[in-house]
Length: 297
Image (cartoon, rainbow, N blue to C red; front, side, top):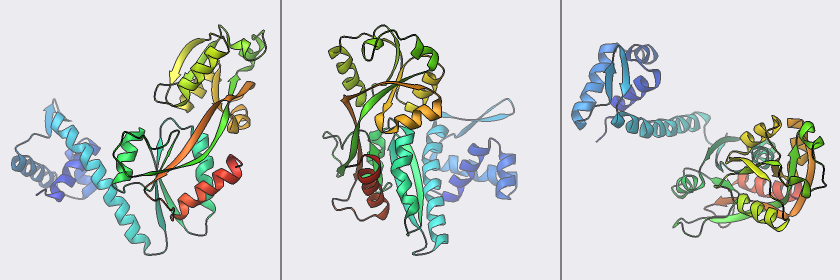
């Protein structure tokens, strides 16, 4: 069985980068920490660190062990915070966000939870959808926000609620917009365009629509992270896209112009949970807010 105290000493050394700094943090002697880590290695017949000059570096086994330790002590920290908060004082709301969902959409979806009478502490984590759904299945998350419903090929119990959908808007800097000689969407032909990456549902829909319009833009960048795509668009690297529901916000935030919109390309957003009948106040606030305020169902 794991000795969690020894694992904690290893975690502290790996995070701080040295036994000396870990000893200061833990208020223990370096000899104590070094001895306990050595015992841990001997017990499992492994090597967690290797010395390179005067520095300690993790071995491959050490890097793998650190990943598990990070998760374990993060959960332990959450448990400690919950116990300190006491019953009925605070509700932990663990939200996973697929990394392809625009940050502005995420914020506007979560905003209604901050106005509830119940005191929520939101723990928001971004990752690939399948990893988030795996954590949802073992109840490490209460909700996953995604641009697609629960994939049918995954053997995970979960229920998808469509929060809403909207059309697509195209943006460009003033300098780039002034060089566009044709009306939208013909102006996209032979123009630098930034598009969502292959992980997104939107990408194939957008490319199909461009083909239907018989325009061939020069695709100069593909991005899974919408915020990074918008940053490149703000620099003038190319025209970029965003959900029409946040078009005004995008123009204000990035100082760009709206050059066109289409309702033929829809982007949808989903709330995925393990509850068929939602009871968590945070999830209820998100679904109601999305339908009444953001997407106007």
